[in-house]
Length: 43
Image 1: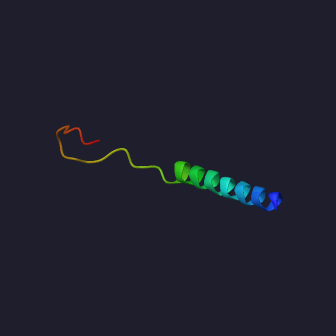
Image 2: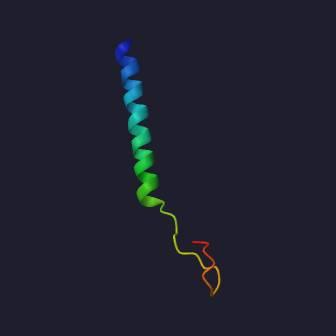
């Protein structure tokens, strides 16, 4: 029974780590926004 729980926790941790890395490197936010000609401080 301990092995089953350990395997489940390992797979959950691995899935979370892969999701975090995927989101961090492949879905970067766009930092440059166009808010007009003046600098309104919106970015």
